[in-house]
Image (cartoon, rainbow, N blue to C red; front, side):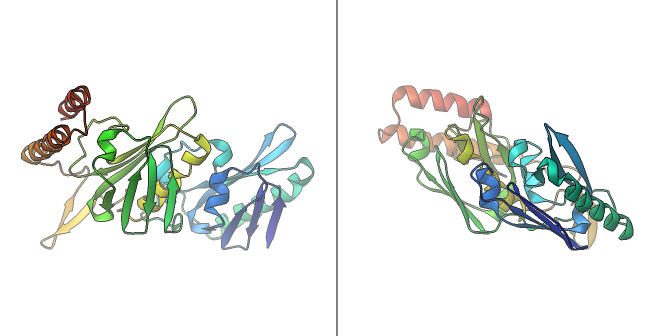
Length: 295
């Protein structure tokens, strides 16, 4: 067993798996503490390095592309401090850190772990149920359904539609952008019906506009990862139909007539909200223009 324990967290490697436990100190980002312990199989690892960082060291684990739903969902956009696969090491413990890194490297060589892209997720992603409260509403995921309950600060057009419930089977993909304090983030659930929609996050009833606490909004990455883990893996380029294998290099486009039906439903819904007095004349005109541009 190769192990190192720091205020930032702990790594323990037994030859087959690396157990990563976040530290409990308040300096450890909320996302890492909320995610909790992660068990990484050796087959998911592509390498490990010990970097120098201002009198300290930093262990950084590199995973194979496609192995982890969290990295897939966030697309490299996680802030460095919130990355669960890094560990800050005190200067007097860099020797122990190098020993852990060397043991992982040796195991990779002995087991001849491939370095290429995986064909399935090798980590399960965040546990469910998971729920996060944001400035735009609360998003919850139970493993099969996503539910969004809008906040009082959400746009009226969102609040008027009531809670949004989306099943995993209706999803095409999840799009996540962090709230960086300098630029708003978003969490968007893209369905076949809304794949071509250009609505901004603050108007889109399938998206959360992340503009409040950057620290708490970052937790939506856990929802994005949990949902992503239950969607088809990106490496799936073939499908079987009538006993034949069909290459699907790109998603099958939705027929134009279907987009027309979606547009009409959106316009009818807006019209109803306008007639009921939920939307003012100005809000109705502005939102209608955005919907038309999106299609």
